[in-house]
Image 1 (spheres, rainbow over the protein chains, first blue to last red):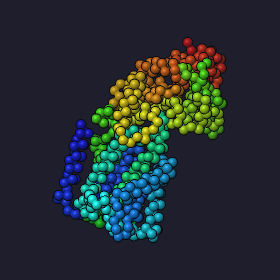
Image 2: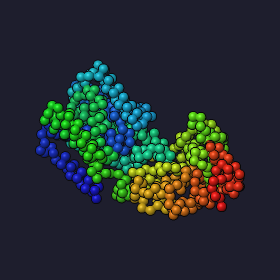
Image 3: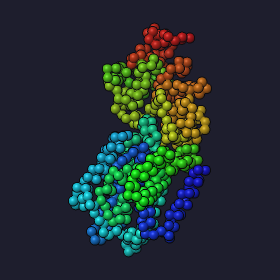
Image 4: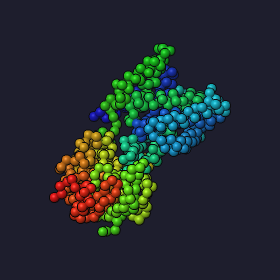
Length: 322
Length: 250
């Protein structure tokens, strides 16, 4: 029953999101596009935190990587091809996640948090110091990637309305992809890791590789969000790797409700909207923002989505999938 | 004695200066229920941990189907066909009874790196889950594991170890905390399984032990003090002195 209500309200929200460009102005649409990309980023982190039980405080490493790779692949005064560059970015991010994952996953718990943070900070300090990457000032992507397939151009990322729809479709696509993954054999295995890794090993699962695969998927999806984020604003800087961003996206996951896929989406919307509102009201917006997060965590320990709408193996596992 | 499938040779495990398991040589054969008894701290659980790969032995060898499995990680040992239950309930508490067993069955697949099809579309795994749930006598498979009674969780624990038809079963106090009715079901089940599987049974319930065990080993302070068929072991004066002496053995 709850599931049905959740599904219905989600569908309504999607329809509203699809209609917003009819009434929204440029600023609003750009803000919402940004939020949807953050939602993708947050969903990818939730795969780790909420479903695999791996709390990463360095997930921005992959977000920043996606952004910087787009900059790197873009010729200075010409557009790079969206599809080709996307394939390259995803492949490079996946390999990077594989390398980093195979190292950081040797630790667990609080050490995992520290080591992931350390890796992201390495990227942060490297880009800050690297002149060829623009240093701490960052770098511009003057021309947006072109979506041309031969002579046909399906959409134009420089147009903010079209960008909005690309972000919307992407968000829905990532949601569906992750949902499919979570229902698969692999998805069940990683959720077993979260629930009781020791028991899962005793049953015969080599848990390391499932954690690693989850890390790679999460990192790759995060790079996708970073790629489009850089494409939206035409700008990258070391902050994309920063612990602030890692912390913010973690907050979205927790606030929205980890262990659900729509939770991080809700979290992204609520957090960024509240943040934007508060920042518009007062210079000292961080203080009320902090209070808001504390209250939210106190009163919604399972996040917004946890207000009785948990997508889990709650009832009969078969029923839940029907 | 039939040809043993799992053999430990002079197995030892030290914790600092303490020998939890010391020079233990023991063998398990298919079709035989081999009970290991002894007072608390005798090293029974440590022995299971060594055999299942959860702990590395300080010395000694473990041969399974002819190969040395010392140093194998627990997941590999499980996939080779040695399943274990845990003394303290160790299940996936947020999952339903069904999902616990389905996941256990899933462990038997060559790989779970399959990302597309729904896990529930694999009929075989669902059937296995239902079969083992029925075997241990659990009802209402949709309930979450943390909502079960202690005894029911023990039943679930055993159901999970059976999902991949292991050749060797290491059962660490399977009856502890179970109600009398459930215990009867489980004892009967162990007896049944013992017909073609090798079973190591660590259990404090002596009635259960003497009713199912074909072979009995007594451990005290990490060492084996006696081994043999239950009747001879029961008569062994050293055993009476060390362990059974305080109990009335009718």
